[in-house]
Amino acid sequence: MRVLAGLASAAAAFTAASAAEAAGSAGEVLGRTLPAWSALPFVGILLSIALFPLLAPRFWHHHYPKVAAAWGLALVVPFVASYGRAAAAEMLHIALLDYVPFIILIGTLFVIGGGILVRGTLRGSPWVNAAIMATGAALASWIGTTGAAVLLIRPLLRANRQRRRKAHTIVFFIFLVANIGGVLTPLGDPPLFLGFLHGVPFFWSLTLWRELLLVAGLVLAAYVVLDVYHWKREDAAVRAPSQVPHEPLRVEGWHNFIFLGGVLAAVVVSAVWHPGAVSVLGVSLQAQNLLRDAVLVLLAAGSLATTSRHTRQENGYTWGPVREVAILFAGIFATIVPVLLVLRAGEHGALGPLIHGVKTPAQFFWGTGLLSSFLDNAPTYLTFLSTTVGRIYPGMPEREAILRLVAENHAYLQAIATGAVFMGANTYIGNAPNFMVKSIAEEAGIEMPGFFGYIFRYALPFLVPIFLLATWVFFG
Image (tube, rainbow, N blue to C red; front, side, top):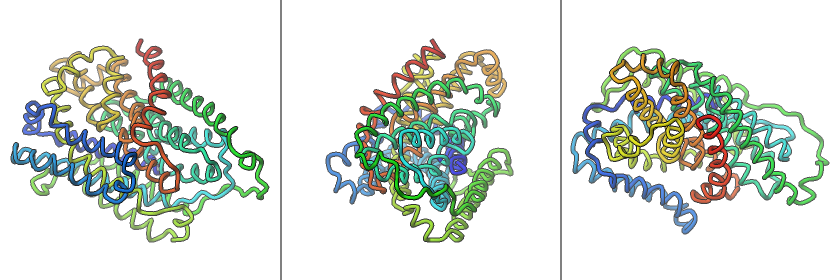
């Protein structure tokens, strides 16, 4: 999602950037020594998210916090017992540098977005839905994928409230607004923001407009074809022009856009202003990040205090979706620590053979993309970026090497950036707003596909062929 999108995108970006900066020498040593099976708790929580809602939905609804906690403890206890202070430090790093800022950002955007109510006559025809998605995709690069998704998901749900077949609409909204649309600026998606912090020019990603037009255009066209098919199967009363008087579009809670602008400003300032660091529980935290998080909390409180309860109720606002995201991602963030350490170790870690085998731009596109589908796409992006500049410009300072890469070997950075952003759409956990949108839709009564249903019914038949075509066009 970003006025919302800008917030969310920037928020996610700052989280990823902080994580990358936190990796110390002890973490690098751990990443080189951890075995591949240390990822089993992470795989376990992913399978739980995928299978329990399908096989035991009532159990999952009531007990998913316990399941998330169980997998988190299954990693944390033996990890700390085996590796001592180094492991404990890494757990604290991801909690204070990643998880807490992530939840503050997501929560702030959720609160502010929930205070913006779009009224008016919106009829969920294929063309209206496509227009909403195209608008969201256009906004995502400037206000962030999270911000754009939070801003537009509720108007989309209201437009389609009379339709029986609408889960596919939410899935394609995730494809386009929560992921693909965020590729044009560092504000759009976390990995691009992280690249900017490491020396990629701010406006470089605007050169990816061809990739965006091809991929987003084909995804949107596929959606229209699919939705026209479902639209024709709707009841005649749904398809017939409404007899209710047309109500012009208008916005309630418009002042929340000011709060959204504040979020965006706080995130951008935290990226360019560096007053120093403070130590919290032995973890070095940047003062600007602490100030940013405090400002975000105040902005969320301001939104709650100044937006009427009636507006939020009309918007279908509850705390359920953000609560679910906070709990499940606590388990994900805890169990992902060994995986990220191994990933940071690059060719020296358990994933070394995979990373070493990635050599051409096409391989970088798919290598970055497939890992970004299941892991945090920001450190994945940084890992492959570091691998590339290390191979092509060994011994050169990072920022100089990145500028040379942009000037002389554009295709590698192009492949890494588009793979990280586009393929976050492949799964519910590929990007933070994916799961948020799913939770909001389910709370509105829409039966969304499960984890594997999302992959096999939508990502594989629709996204993968388009990504294969993009590979041939741009990296062939």
